[in-house]
Length: 495
Image (cartoon, rainbow, N blue to C red; front, side, top):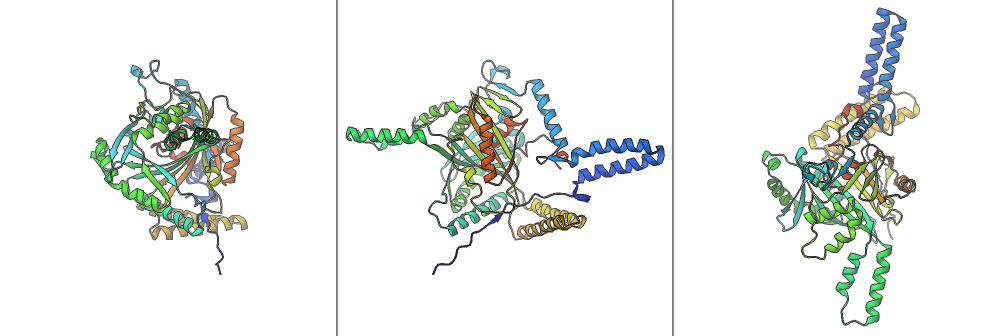
């Protein structure tokens, strides 16, 4: 007699919030309190009319902190717009490399946040060769692992549950290291050019085979290549140099990463993900393909050449790039990036993102980046304790049935987070970036409708990365650009 299977569900977690009276954030509460005190003092000294003026001005100042649209306060939106208009006025939204570039000497570099980056190559203790991207300004180094996830086809549910648990253990153990800044799995889909399939067919077809057999093989390969979409998962791990030697000498950091890399690969294998480090040439290839989709066929053809391709890291970017308010134009293509504003509510299964991640013929060039930013053990303890205290304050300051029930649930969730963190579980921030690339002149309204439909099926709330499409595009590549860490919006405005 078989036991009845019980579907396992998970929580998407909660966002810690520092709440004051009436559910206001601390900056909003302090500002509102200062306005009330100023109005009372003005009324006592100058009379009712001046006090009314002070109150009206104070309300105008406080309202943008209280009212949020799409998870952002009015001040956050104002800062982003100001930065966008200032950059556009200076011509910073335009990029052109090569002989006609405004870069001194006509140099060629990657655009935007990746301009100062450097690419090195190291060797792990197990013999693997890996590429390492260095962002000197932040003392951060990123390696990229090519991944082959097992998938859930013909796999028993207990094994899937084991993989999910192992992935959580991987995030907790790797994130527990003080120098790990981010872990970014990227699910990249691109159109199948047929070069790889044709190379495989050529390798397995004998020259003395019958003509009809060879013709059938080539026709079948051609038909399959025209109907398929490539799925190329990878995982980027960003480390922060913690010693003066590693900050100044990339080779020192490469030695440290090479020592730890075999253990990382073993931990991923336990989570059902076979992986191997990508070389510098492989990293250059997918970055170049992302910025210039027309180069994909040539890059794939070069993989059969023992010398590889001749593209350098500085040449991996587009010849030209123009950042518009709501999209990015580059190398004859247009890209749009969205970001997650709210995680799936309630309980979910491990397949919640399946429809969003799987290849879609209507969206052949689609890139999903899940950005995990683990907290250190000391940070996690401080955060869960503060969140529990804030949840208790919010519960005490709310009245009414439905609101009070929500506050009580938040207290229970915060208490559970405290207990799990005390048992050794990690605490991780996460977000999702969705990037779609299409030929110039594509129907963006249709693309946005498709993305909205897929995100709804995944129970995600998303918003378009207006005013910072270039940075968001680089962030979704998985090459070391971490938007929250490299942002320029003051944290007080994000309350």
